[in-house]
Length: 226
Image (tube, rainbow, N blue to C red):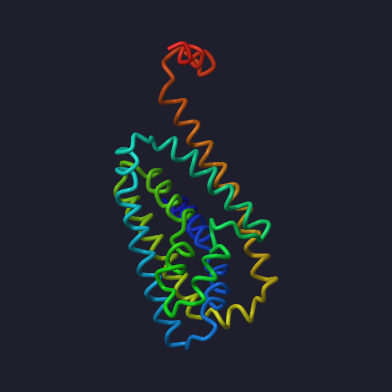
C-alpha cells in the first residue's frame, strides 16, 4: 500500500509540476496584487481539483461507454505521457503541459486567469487527467485504494497551492536554471512511468485474449484470419 501511495504521489507531483507552474503563474499576472494572485491561486486549485476528481470517479465509466478498454487507454495514455516527458527533458512547450503562445497572449488581457489557463490546462491538463484515470484504473476493484489515490491527488493539489502562494519567493530562490534542472529530472522519471503504463497495457491486452495452451504469437494470425 505504501509503495502504491508513493508511486501515486510521484506521478501526480511530476505531472502537475508545481515548480514549473509557479514562474508561469507570475508571468501571466505581472500587474496583479498579491491579494488577487492569492484569490486566483485558490480558485484555480479548487476548479482543477473538481475536474480531476470527476475524471477519477467517472473516467472508467466514460471509457466503457465509448467501448475503450482500460488496456487501450493505458497504452495511449503512456504514449501521451512519454511525449510530455520529452517536453520536460528538453524544457520546451508544446501545449501538453503549458500554454501555447496564442493562449498566453489571450491570458495577458484577462484580469482573472484562474479558470483559464491556470486551472485548465496548467494544473488539470491532459497529462493530469490521463494519469488520474490510469492510476484509478490500476486500483480497480479496490475502493479503499481508489480513495487513497484521490486523497494523494488532493494532497498534491494542496502542495501546488502552497507553491503558487509562495511563487515569487520560490522563483527568486531557484532561478530559471534551477527550475529547468528540476523539471528535466522529473521528465526522466515521467518517461519511465510512461513506459511502464504502456507495458502494463500490452500485458493486460495479451492476457485478456490469450487462451490456455495458445501463445500470443500463435494467436495473432488466427485473429487476423477472422
